[in-house]
Image 1 (spheres, rainbow, N blue to C red):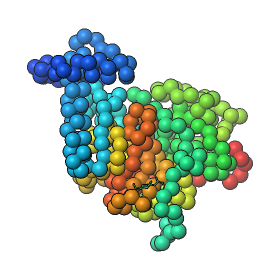
Image 2: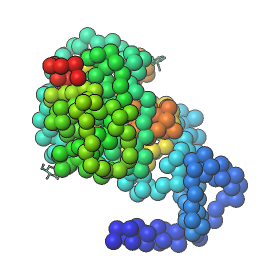
Image 3: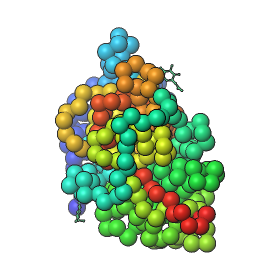
Length: 341
Ligand SMILES: *[C@@H]1O[C@H](CO)[C@@H](O)[C@H](O)[C@H]1NC(C)=O
Ligand SMILES: *[C@@H]1O[C@H](CO)[C@@H](O)[C@H](O)[C@H]1NC(C)=O
C-alpha cells in the first residue's frame, strides 16, 4: 500500500520533471557524483534523480554565492543526499519523535545550573579524548540511538578514562519502550532507560550496526558501562546547557533540522531565522562550544551522517538564540556509582 503510493508519487513527479530540460554541461559532474557515492538507478529513475540533483546543486550554489558576499555565516556542499527530494530527506531525518508534550513530560533529574558558572570559554570533548569517530545511521531513522551512544561514551570516558565505541544496534533491538521504534524514530532519554533496565550496554565491536530492527542480543558478560538514571537540562535554558557541557560532558540534544539547507551544511557557523515552532525532528550530540567567537559563540555538534556531511561530520551552530531549538530537549545519562562496569 505505502510502496504503491510512493511509487505513484515518484511517477507523478517524474512526469513533471521530464518536461524540465536537464543541463548537458553538468553531465560529467553528475557522473562523478554518482561514482563517488555508488549510485545506480534503473533507467526510468535516472532523469528524475538527475533533475532533483540539479535542483539541489543550484540551491547549494546560490546559497554559497550569497554566503561569499557575507549574507550567511555558513556554506553548503553537495553530498550523498544530493538526489533526495525535500520529502525524502525529511523522512530520513524524522528520527527523533517530536511530540512536544511527551518531551516536556520527560522525568529526569534536573540539572541545577548556576547564575554565574565558573566554566571555561571553550570546551571540546574531542580534544580531551571523549568522543568516538563519526558514525553513519544510513537510511534508517535511528539518530536517537546514535545521540544516546555518544552521550554514554562520554559518560564512560569521564568515569574510566577509556573511550569505547558503544552499540546503537543494542539500543534499537533491546528497547522495551514502545515509543523507541528502531528506524522509525525514538527518544534519547528512553535509550538511557533501556541501558538502565538491561543493566548495561555492549560495544559497537561486539554488537555491530545493521541499520534495521532485530531481536535483542545483549550479552551482560560483555557490558561496557551502565547508567542508573538520566538527567535533563531545563527547557530552553541555553546557559544551563553550556554549563552542563562543561561540567558533565557530551549532551544529547533534539534539533530542528527541518531547514532544507541543514542536509547540505558544509562549513561555517549555521544560523537560520527561527520560525517560532518548537519542533525537534533530529537528535545530535553536543561535544563542545566556543565563546571566543563573534556574537555569542557556537556549539559543536556531532552528527551521525558520516564524515561526508558538514565539517568532517560535525556542525558549528550559532549559540545564544536557541538556534534549531537546540535547548528544547537536552538529556544525559547518569553513571551507576556501583561497579566499574
Ligand atoms: C506520547 O506518549 C504517549 C504515552 O506514553 C504515547 O502513547 C504516544 O505514542 C507518545 N507520542 C509520541 C509521538 O511518541
Ligand atoms: C574559538 O573561535 C575563535 C573565533 O572563531 C577562533 O579563533 C578560535 O580558534 C576558537 N577556539 C578554539 C579552541 O577552537
